[in-house]
Image 1 (cartoon, rainbow, N blue to C red):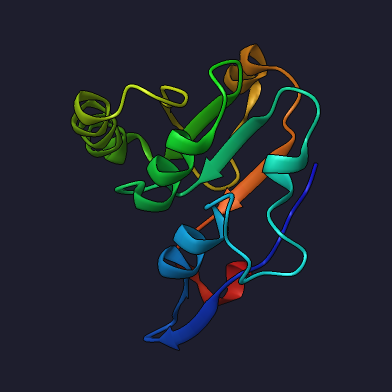
Image 2 (image 1 turned 90 degrees about the vertical axis):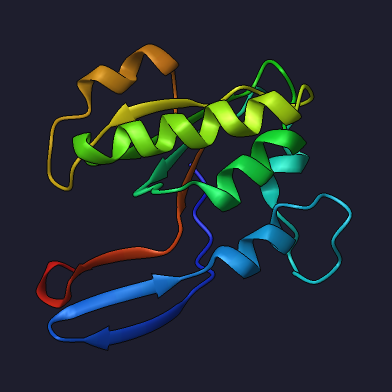
Length: 138
């Protein structure tokens, strides 16, 4: 599994936010020369299985979805009450984008069981973008 940290952190009122959407849009563009090393997702000879934690509106992940091959898997996760928002984002995005992979939305809260994600196979990459959590949970 590959993890790259691209973020700007800010702490306020006992919460910490890791903001990365704008940087990830560039990072998830195969022709980008901004980052060294470049995004390893595009240099992977095998099928990618990518899980995003705390997907929310899924802006960066949906950009990534358009860059992936059809045989790749992209699973967007967030709290159960956010799954409808993620699905709405996927539905709106998929009406305009026929290339890439169609992401799936799954519930996943911090510290909960991930057994329901095993059906997607071995995870090759984890994306964490614009996460908000309590400072003492980090």
